Length: 299
Ligand SMILES: O=P(O)(O)OC[C@H]1O[C@H](O)[C@H](O)[C@@H](O)[C@@H]1O
Image (tube, rainbow, N blue to C red; front, side, top):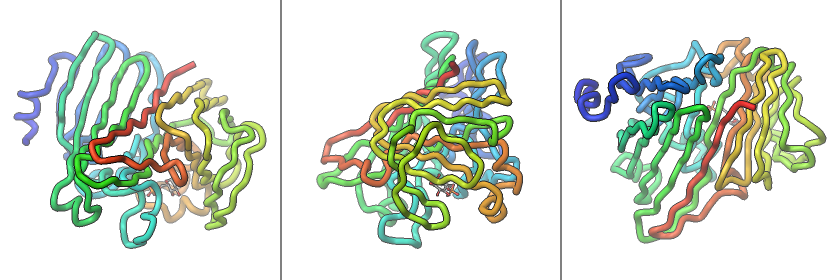
């Protein structure tokens, strides 16, 4: 559908407009009384989220590609139906295929002047079945207001069970990554992916980022908090349907070769990802569903 037809169907005067955004990608611009946000229909990708009177909360790379079929660096990539590398086929893309596909708008509504709810949907087609041969419906609900709520609902519309791992891969902007603390993982064991170590360690105390971190925390159903001391901001990430999380910052060496990333980008971002990763993957029975949810708020 072209931009004019999308607006005719889904625009809400004064609050929601669909535009040709970065790289010409169709983008839903939301501006309500509590916050503004941009959501790329390609990838079902929240690009920005800014509560009124405050700084932008998400980090979005100035060097990112913005093109149909290419991953966007920053914002909130949706990783599905696998998180990280494909479990058996290394030729498949990291983090699944929906982050580089065009989604459809299912609905956009404004229940109050302070909240806008955008629902995007993607269903199996010839392209997805060639990669992953299961019938499915995947729904992304982004609720924009004083809080940002992101829900990813998987439906198994086929006759055989399937297994998914997934992630709401949130990039937070911070003033100075070496002056942040992340809470919620003290005593939690994690799978350490730095340098291909692939060992299991236990987090002691709050997380400080002073080197590369790529940690998949398991058995952590509770909230995480990000204290950005230099930026004077304290963010809380509550979640539902998740018992795992990833904390990621590529630091100096890995930054040098990361697509869509500047060598200094690691200084002003950190990913705290709401996941069903590794052993927290989910089996979805025929006709079954699973919802993964991240609620992001300011403390
Ligand atoms: O570069 P991408 O495919 O977007 O992945 C970026 C990162 O995502 C996650 O945080 C993984 O744990 C990392 O290992 C990966 O490098």
